[in-house]
Image: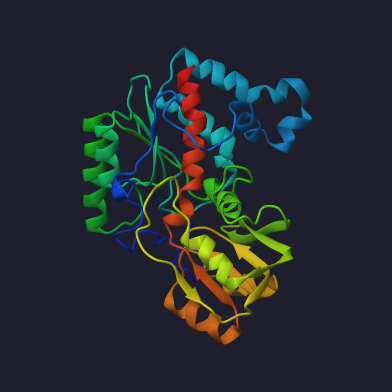
Length: 322
């Protein structure tokens, strides 16, 4: 996610952000068999695809995702999997940054045999997918960011390589940040052990809440930093160390958690937060945080956004398994 004050639409300005092959640790799932350690069952994940409106329609509406799964199994095409993803994430309900273009970005006409994930659809991730025989790649940052001549050249090269290798690419940006169960911000909340206390939606991007505000506890700032340093996504090595602007209290009581790049201090102040945990923020935001007495814990753009793609890939891998 890229938010105001954190470089809106500029998620990729650092070359090291979002390489799925960092440290040689890259996960893919053949029928879900190679996806492990996430601890969520298929039935539970299916429930995440039901909106309140669907749930109110009772038994018929409640089986919608199951029916999708059964229809997909007849012939598991990239387009069919993309439709399931869009239903679960409620993609059509979201406005997003122009470069996001959520949905299936590169397709092919064959049945999907293996599903994998990467934070970014960069050339390295695409080639690694091809090497691992992944034919449906779930990413958070797709191929359409940027509009310069260089951006267009890079994009064309990625598309050619994906088609050559037979890798379909499905991308979800803000919908995957915001999902209340498999979303990035929820995943980060769990990873930091902040999911057991009172929480409320926080962090507006393009008109939708995509993060959380937690309160009702006392956390040492140093302990929060230590937990952020331990983020590894799923055995993925960190591309860079975290950065801490220790301008607020040493004991944190009201914490905002928004993944990726978020630096809207107006929202932070309005919510009465003393600490913001996010991926990155620009320099002016860091300066203002010092002046306002707010803790900023910047845990890495990529490192805070591995959760959603992993959980979505787990679900799709089990669908492919039949």
